[in-house]
Image (cartoon, rainbow, N blue to C red; front, side, top):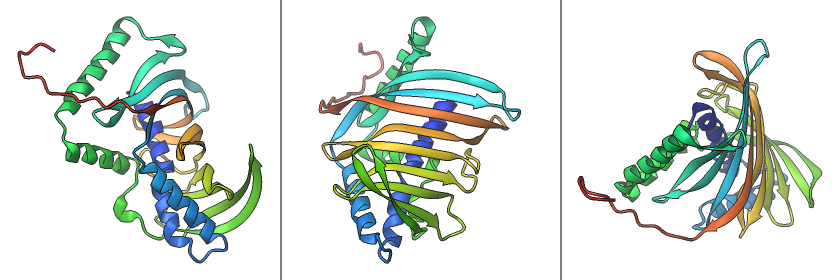
Length: 268
């Protein structure tokens, strides 16, 4: 998976990670603290659900250099599934064309390598990998303390939702983002999350903005679309990245596959 897609994925992990738990700690004394707390608790519980989904993810990436010239513009279509209980994004198409030739062989090798590598992992090793992904995204479980307070509460119509809109601003100078959250008060569901990047975080530089919208299937929050527009440090250069992720064809993942290691010399 190329670095642009990896960076975009880490941004999405950051959206759906620490802020939910950070907000839990600060919400008790706010006017809408009860709504915020209930909604976040529902979200966190749903994200820990055993119900899982496979889906298609269409990624449109555009890069601009410091002079504003577009240097990259392409799309990638991924089939996101599971191998040994870990998510795997298998590349299907680039710029609307199915992989073929060497590109298809390379992607098949990446898939086969993942099957082989993950077959040797126990539950602890898989959990460690998931934890490392969170750390790579700048989300540390040790840093989940009181970081935000509610600065404003508003109402806005989104699709069929008369949403309560809550702004969260950091109390600590160490916080990297401010957030705006759209909540459906009738169902206690998060429908949209925006953030503004206040400070550099890894490769992501300050000044960027992001929006992510959600739908719910079996009470599980699933992303529908995300948009990021901001600067990042790539190859020792500052690059403006505009990335759109569109998610579709959610399918409940109900098949369990046991992957057994193959001893050297055995036929697969």
